[in-house]
Amino acid sequence: MANFNDKFMDDEKFYLVDGKENNDKWTRDILSFNREDRVNSPSHYTQGTQEAIDIIEEAIDAAPSVKDGMLQAQVLKYLLRMWHKDNPAQDSRKALWYLNRLVDSLN
Image (cartoon, rainbow, N blue to C red):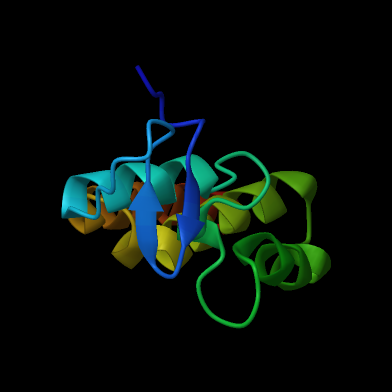
């Protein structure tokens, strides 16, 4: 039996190791997921022209403290990826939670 690590893509058709063509949506999704580097470049952080980490590092450079920079980074992280994950409402609530802590820290 073929596993999803033993496949290749050719002319936009996916083939399993046993040679049977399978181009249904489920298979394409699984193959796409397996090709994604979920540690070094997850898709929810690499949308657009810059990776989220680059935007965040640049944005927090002038933070008045490490704590404030960390809180700002968390706010940005959740806002930058919210449309690319499965629960934008939850990500926006998390961003707000960190933003409230940042506001309290600045006061």
